[in-house]
Amino acid sequence: MKPEPNPIDVHIGQQVCALRTARSIGQETLARRLTMSNYCLDQCEKGNNRFMSHQLHKVAEITGVTICYFFEGIEDELLALGENGVNDKTVMTPFCDKRSTTTPFD
Image (cartoon, rainbow, N blue to C red):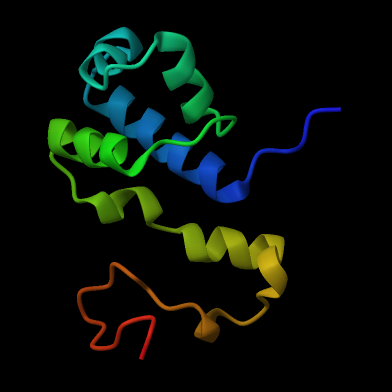
């Protein structure tokens, strides 16, 4: 039995797919620019495989967003799922929130 995809990988994959579609970039085109196969990109967009950090950075460059775009809304999704025992949004540090004056390690 195949394990369920990680909710973070699913979220990031959905963000990439939605952004790619909104920018009218075909899957084949993006895959070629990321030097990966169409199949691999499809699996990453579904959350079955993980994007590497340099690939997310490249997608951000190609589409004109910041890397933080891919993580927007993830706290709410994890909270709803009760991922990792998180049941209080206040414990989650917004890594990409420019208003935040602390780091996750403070």
